[in-house]
Length: 170
Image (cartoon, rainbow, N blue to C red; front, side, top):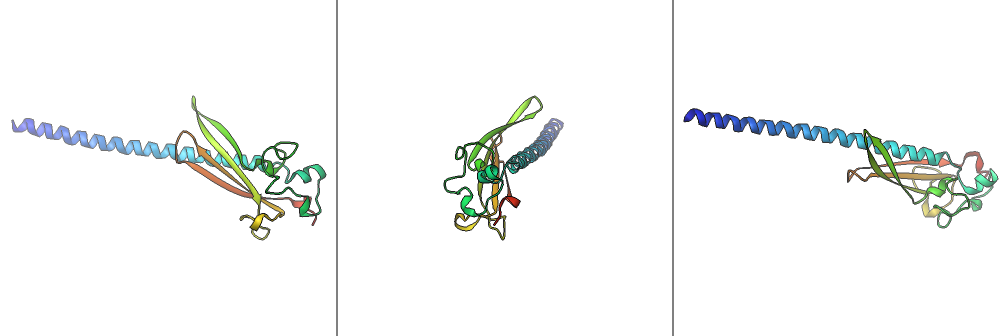
């Protein structure tokens, strides 16, 4: 009888040990998956920033190649966002408040991401911060936020400033 009790106790201890090991493996796999998806989120955000950066600085520069004053630039209050100029997605501010859904293949399945971008004029002294009071400047600050649809609470936010360069002649 005592040997049976010892055997049962040994089996219970072994089962407890096995469950703990399975939990460790589960948490390790979960962490790896979250890190991989986070890397995919960052990649999608950088990809969208590169796409936005490949566009013209402002519709007036796209149309005329140069502007001589800030008055010729689009207003952040009325000129930013999809549908505010004749040609969609040909300049940076067309991506303000733009929402999109991206899909990335993972094996035989895919992950879904919501992509949101905001565009605002940036401070000329420190282009990594927004300009005070919506003042038009030679810099636009673009912020892209990508959220995972499949894994809640995972998101990546990337910002970058773009200059009008030689297109601004003031």
